[in-house]
Every structure is written in C-alpha cells, then in structure tokens.
Length: 158
Image (tube, rainbow, N blue to C red):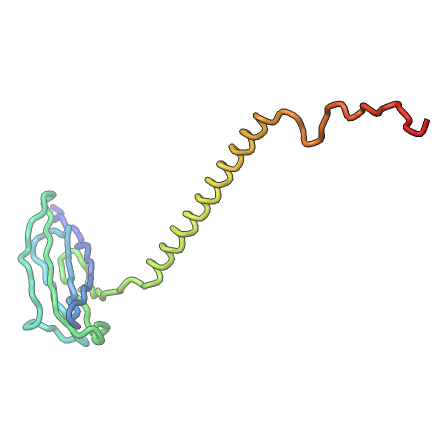
C-alpha cells in the first residue's frame, strides 16, 4: 500500500516596521502531518528566536504551519527557512525575495498611458460628433453657390 504524500507549498514573506524586519515562512497543503520548519542564519538553526504556529489541518485533509523571526533589515540575506517533510527528497531552503520597487512604478506608468489614450480617443469621438452637427446645420459648402452672376453677360464698358 502506497502512503499518500503531498509536498508542502512554501511561501516566505517579509514585513518591516520600526526598523525590524519580520520574516514569515508558511508551509501549506502537505501530508502527512509531521513536518519540521525552522529559520537558519548563515546555516545555523535559530531555535530561540523563531516563533511557530501549530500544525493545523486544512479542509482537504492536508496541513499548514508557519514560523516567523525578527531580524535586522540589513541582514535579511543571511536568513533562510528550512522545511523538512516526508514528501521532500531533501530539506527545502527558502529565502525572502522582496518585490522590486520597479513593479509599482511600471504599473503606474501603464495606467497613465491608458488614461491618456482613453482621453484622446474620447476627444476624437467628441470632435467628430461636433463636426457632424455643424455639417447638419450648414448644408451648403464653403463657397457660395448662389447667384453671383448678376453681372454675368453684361459688359460695363459697353
């Protein structure tokens, strides 16, 4: 009989407040229940500094757990979350990769470009409707097609 094994899905995040960076490691969706989750600094387990939650069941029969540690922001590269589980051939090591500040900037630029294009398109539609209204009221062309020929055929020098 094969024993059911589900690999943990691990996410590492960070939140900075008051010059302290709290690193959080969450493992979820794993089975069986036994798991080891710990924080390492330069490869050394930080048992005393690590806070852990209990291993808790999910509605699908798998489990989840978390562990956090408070660190100095400048030392974040020294820390890794280690996860050991029966479904993994070897312990997994996970680091926090903060999002680049470039992503929100690019998103803002994209929104601004779309807004400008929408405004220009709206202006073009409005302008074309204005032109149609003017054409509707002014049926004649720009040159006067009326009788400018009252002197036609007459020769004033005669």
